[in-house]
Structure formats: structure tokens, C-alpha cells
Length: 443
Image (cartoon, rainbow, N blue to C red; front, side, top):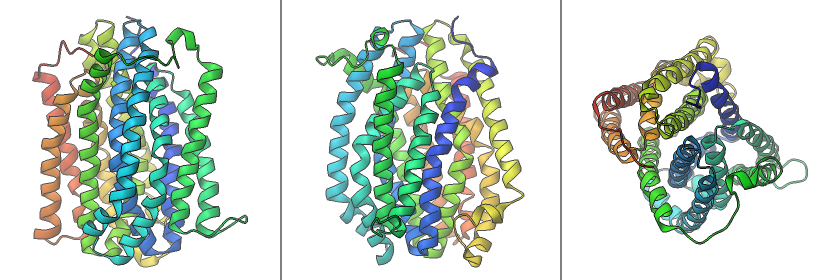
């Protein structure tokens, strides 16, 4: 057995992804913080527009995760030449789908946002953001492909470097373009969107240069453009398509969550955008260890050791939980300081405080739930994972609807729906891994 599954090896794969995710979330925090000091409307619109954008991007993100699983399986089998072939076929697909999604956002976003958003101010600002942000999706597709490649081969340090570079670029252009500094135009919320597009482009250039200089291209048969191998293409689609749908539905449900909150008022929406940004930061280790468990599970199956899967998941869960516990342990004593990063509005800080405490609790459940769930995807049973996620999301949205429209709950109570989601997902994933038929999946 070549894949090591001790805590140190898992951490070696996960920590660069964590650092990369931290840098990625610096972009989100920067956008939210700068826009929060611009206006409450801009802050609320950023929540709607960002989640709308990422709900669409989840299509290609899901394909990237499928590519990662397939690449990891080929690495486990020592079939390195197929890694490059898988990479280039994924590139073909992502460019095609990315172009379609770009056209969809440019043409359809205004009418969709108009239909979904009740506030004219929120609608106009959201539409301004998406009209610029949409143009970065092709760069994002290439970045997701490189991310899938490096996580799939378990060489993840470059992810932290590229994303740190991306974050630095974004912070600079955020400040310059939102407020009109250093001789650049004052663009407000459009400036935040343009800064993100520029940052994605520079990250893509970084990945390309690094790969050409540091990766043994011949070993992986990388960057070799070839005719489409339809059996390989079909295999990629079979693994990736359920993850694409699952991720799209997951982010879409969170978008629906924010649409419901928007109906409660712009103040509640602004609070929720602050909480979203804090929550995403707390979840950074969770998603990083989820990516690690995807790779490790797929690799140990490729090596012929499916009996090691639960050991991989258990050890990864331990590290993920301890990482989140450390973040919560620090943050719980300084909630006002954290919230004040995003706004200097005293009332907004006061009303956000109880919601922060709610997500501190729910974030401790997700290391267990997400690691178990990603373990299912790593086995290759992505269709089963998608069905499970759809069932869980149905319960989640039902709970949100009841809290907002039936019980007329406070914004803090509405956020307790995260507990339902984590508990449902974790329980269902554990039962599937314990009793489901996932052995023998071909990737």
C-alpha cells in the first residue's frame, strides 16, 4: 500500500488546501468588508450576487471534483499517462460549459434577479455585480482544472501559493476600484466584481507558468491535445455529472435561503451576508479535509484496499473537527471584533452577535457531516451522493421556509436551520457508508 493514511500524511495534503482556501476567503472577506463600509444595500446585494454567481459556477466546480476523483484513481493504479489524458478531456468540457454559462449569465441574469429580488436597490446593485463578474468564469474553469489535477496527485502546495497571489491581487484592486484609488475609476460594487475577475486571470497565469516549470509533463503526458476519447469522456461525465448537479442544488438552496431572508428586510440580509462570510471562514478546514478525503479514498480503492476507507474517513474527521474547534475557540471570545471588520454600524453589530453564536455551534457539526459525505463521493458512487444530498436539501429548505414564513422567526433562529442540514447530512452519509453497497464502483 503506497498511500499513507496517518494523520501527518492527511495533514500534508490538506494544509495547503486550507491555506489556499484562507486566501480565497480573504477575497470574500475583502469584498464584504469594503462593500459593508460602502452601504448596507451594497452589502446585501453582494450576498445575493455572489451566491447567484457561485451557484452557477458549481456546475464546473462539480466537474472539477469528478476530475479530481478520476485522477486520484489513476494515480492509485499507477496509470500516470492517463492523468494527462483525463486533464485535457476535462479542459475540453470545461471550456465548452464555461462559455455556455457565461452566455447564460449575461443574457438571463437581469430577468432572473428581477423576478427573485423584491428590493429595487438590491436588484440594481446585484445586477451591476453579475454583469462584470460573469466574465471571469472561463478563468475560473481553468483554475478549477489545475486545482483538480494537483489535489488528485496529492501535490497541493501550489494551491496555497496561487490563491495567496490571487488574494493579494484582489485586495489591491478591490480597494482601488471600489473607492477609486491610485488613479483608477470609482466603480463601487462593479469594482469588487472587476477585481475578482482580474484576480482569477492572474491565478490562471500563475498555474500555467508553475506547471510548465515544475511538473514533469512527460510523466503525466500533460498538455497533450488529442482527439476525444469518447469512453474516457463518458466516464468523466458519469462520475462528475451527479456532483455538478449536487453542488448546483446545494448552492442554489443557499441562494434560496438568502432570497427568503431578503424578504425579511435589507437589514436582515446585511446581517446574513456578514454571517455568511464568517461562516465560510470557519468552514475552510472542513472543505479542505473534504477534498483530501476525496483523493485518499479514491487512491486507496485504486490500490486495492477498500477496507481502509473508514480509517481514512475517521482520521480525516478528527483533524477537521480539531481545526474548526480551534477557530471557534478563538472566535467565541471576540465576536464584536470579528463583526466590526465588516461594518461600523453599531446596530448591525449588535443584531449580528446572536447569529454568530448560532453558527459557532453549527460549524462544529460540519467536520463530521462533510467528511462522511465526501467519503461517499471518493468511492465513485457520486450518483448515490447526489440523491442523498437532494433528500437532505429538501428537509433543509423545508425548515427554512417554516422558520421564515410560518413561525416568523428572528434572523438568529432562521440560521439554526444549519443544524438541521448538518445532522441530516451526517446521519444519512454514515448510514450509507455503513450499510450501502458502494464496493466495486468503476471510475
